[in-house]
Length: 83
Image 1: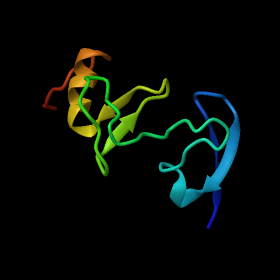
Image 2: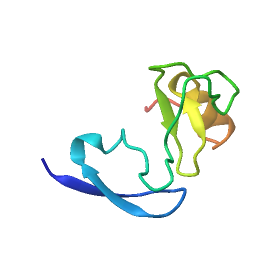
Image 3: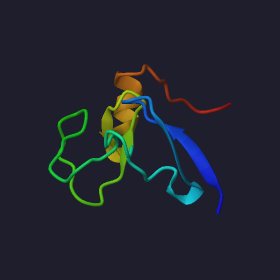
Image 4: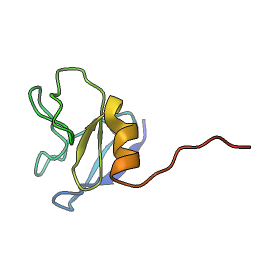
């Protein structure tokens, strides 16, 4: 299995993980990326075990079910249909 190099957006340290852990690994230096049950997302909704979440580069946590709202309201995305 190949390794990938990641850079923590919180402490800016680089670290390597196996490729299959790329999106499921916390920073070994500062713990960035750890989200515990009982935490809240950007909208204040409680995060419970096994919730699907998205974490932005600046550490903002968004429940996957709130992602479309976040993209529209915070980042200014527009959803439309191709013609």
